[in-house]
Image (cartoon, helix red, strand yellow):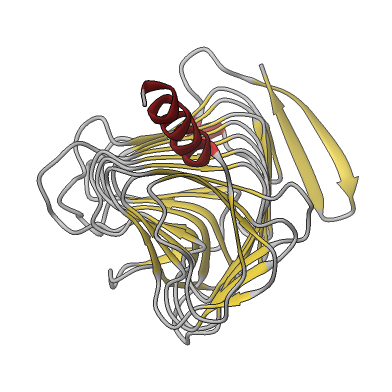
Length: 318
């Protein structure tokens, strides 16, 4: 009897560690913990939610998950990968991936397409988002989006070390945005390429953003709104907007530019200040398409100007 019981227990434990292959037209499985591997395209009729106490790896396996609304809401620990390549998470009318408070979201490789917010924090607090690779697109508003609503709790952490981020705009009076940082989040960009058409690379209104070794290409020479503020911002690679007076802004709210390449049709770096306010952009290195002398940290000086094209000048710093 003991031998039989031991055999059954071993089988149960083995099954718990196995992956689940899944292909359906309307839903993903409710999985305790483990790996969900797609074997076909999925069209959701409601968003797929990961509970706070679950740890799941979603392998797209070259297939797509599509929804007219938000596709995924992660409240637990979720790793999204695509071992085959070409797999997509697509929202045709809303955000693609949302996160809840204290959740952990790892995106290792995927194609994520949305109308607004390929990845969005919403009202989350204490969440961690790690983006290692993939292609992220928003056809309107921000690609990586936060929310500036006043709330209690610790800031979220967003780490971006790679990937391609494509942003566009369709809403009149607005500009597109690569990363929107309106709350007390800590955002670290150590890699990736941001191609923002008709918009800004980063718009911060609070929090702490550090950029190292990333590329920001922005186009457009208009100004427009981002988020729910009436303050308009330019199509610069880096923008800090203090005039919006978002509730989470404090003395430590700043964008640090350590290195990277920043190309814009307008000023590469812009700040929209309140009266008598000090700069909230500190540049210690990088290559810029326009002069950024007024934002240099103490002791930093420009060392060279190189003409890449007839109308473009790049500034290198030490």
